[in-house]
Image 1 (cartoon, rainbow, N blue to C red):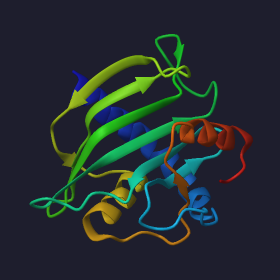
Image 2: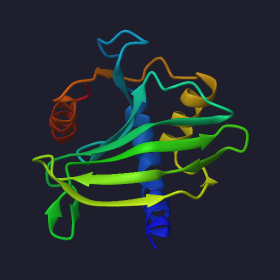
Image 3: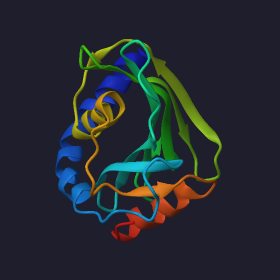
Amino acid sequence: MPGRRTLNFIRLTGAALGAGLLAGCASAPGPVAEGTASWRKLTQVEQSFAIFMENPAPAPVEGLATFRFVYVYAPGAVQHEGQEVSWQEYSAMTVNCAQDTVRTGPRLRYAPDGAVITSDENQEFADIIGPAIRRAAGGACRGVTAPEQVLIPDGADWREAARASIASGEPF
């Protein structure tokens, strides 16, 4: 069942995200002005992956905040059915701001060349777990963002820049 796999993935990465939380907090602010089209780094596990959300996040509608949420992986860090995964994107992650729950929605996994490897979808709301989703919910629902979080400009090559940075262990 795709919904369970998605929730299990989130649960399994929760512990790794907790370890990477301090690394994400230690990053210096990026060169992008708040309010411009960019990606906000929520956390990073050195030489493995980083998690981003679109910035600025769209305002909640009727208590539901929906935004793009992306895992970017260092080269060679993640495989799916024998194929390298470069990034995976949740194109419509939705947080119920009042109930503090999340629906991950559609997810696409991409190869380094941008080809879609696999997709699935989970439309069920579940409790928010993991610091990255909690940070995303705080930003999307209440406009609360940590000033030390990195913003990187949106554009065709932002994920490749993120992958190189993650692989090198250097912050953005």
